[in-house]
Length: 184
Length: 126
Image (cartoon, rainbow over all chains, first blue to last red; front, side):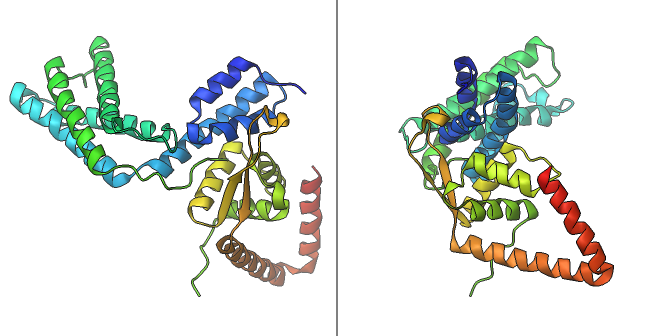
């Protein structure tokens, strides 16, 4: 019986959230006809599985609180360090970009969490991950001279406050891990 | 008695697939059966996964993992079965479909129904 190349399986396994990995990899393995067919199956299945995991694990209320606190962190940093930014063109919109990125990182981090595995450091790790994505994106914006780039001192101060905020929210509202998991 | 959960057309197809597959209802087989039922439209495996998760969250179906098998590269299957809520929802949606069918036949006549039946059988064979 033909089997898909190991490297393809590895890639699809990495992209699939752990809650559904076993089942999705098994299903696409069973349907395998050729490498191209395997890629096409995975191409259509994996984004849907990620979406479904996000829908199952995301808590809209907690994410909204995270977004508001990260926004407040960057707003406070701008108020303290560079008040002119607030009065400039799109100043307040520029400060909203980090909260959007942090929320995306948090949603993905919840979707890709291993079911049943809990760690006391998880809220802090999520904060670091969320703000890490913000820092990475801001560096890319600055390098590309993108108008939504923020000055590094605001990113540093707002980011530090953001990590603390996300960690605090994570500790106050721990994730409910009792919902059914496992697409497919 | 509480009202049955209202379901969409695709959810109806997935529930019907699970009902007709008995103990062999898992991702690949459900996708195959939904593909047959929804002809001539094609359906992606991902759409079936999303719907299965949604139906499970609504409590219409439940799932369990089987033992790993060689045909799946040593991986387990997630099998599904209808729960009482799912059966009620499917019954209600089948009754609605029947009423729609009867109303159309009443207007367009039995000849149309026969021709339509032949067309549907041809899609089924394709």
